[in-house]
Image (cartoon, rainbow, N blue to C red; front, side, top):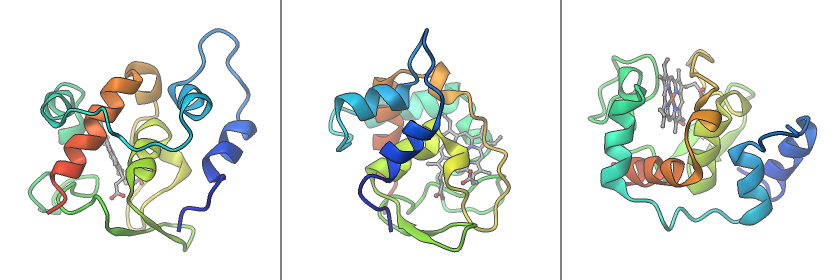
Amino acid sequence: MVLAGQRELRVEDRPADPVRPRVLDVRVAARPAHDGAEGEPARGQQLAEAQGCLQCHTTDGSLTATGPTWKGLAGSVRPLTDGSEVVADDTYLFNSIVDPRSQIVEGYEAVMPVFFADQLDEQQIDDLVEYIKSLAS
Ligand code: HEC
């Protein structure tokens, strides 16, 4: 399970960027309890195509891709390589995009690019989270 305060701990561990705070740092400072409320699934779908997410993730449940399918992901229990399990809530999905190395899904390699935190703004990440949530069932 995701423990309260887990995300804050990780941010404290990372050296602060004096020039440009990372999206995750901004998010934690501004709104610790992420609810993804302002995301727009249709924009998220366009972003997923434009950013190349769909080269590694399927949206139809097929397991042929490099990364896990997004079909049924939101709200499910994810087994991680460290032996723990987390529920794929909004915070987990957000963190998986901006800080993919923080939690690696069991059975997958840590090959997801780490640059999305610098490449996308907070709104765009919310859009992607909402798109993934729209594929929950
Ligand atoms: C080069 C391939 C690749 C690309 C591109 C990629 N991912 Fe991933 N992604 C992965 C892999 C592999 C995993 C599983 C390992 C891990 O947890 O990092 C993953 C994990 C995830 C997870 C957690 C999935 C789960 O089952 O718990 C989410 C959410 C996610 N990616 C979203 C995205 C989004 C959004 C983008 C585009 C902005 C993206 N990914 C681009 C390969 C990729």
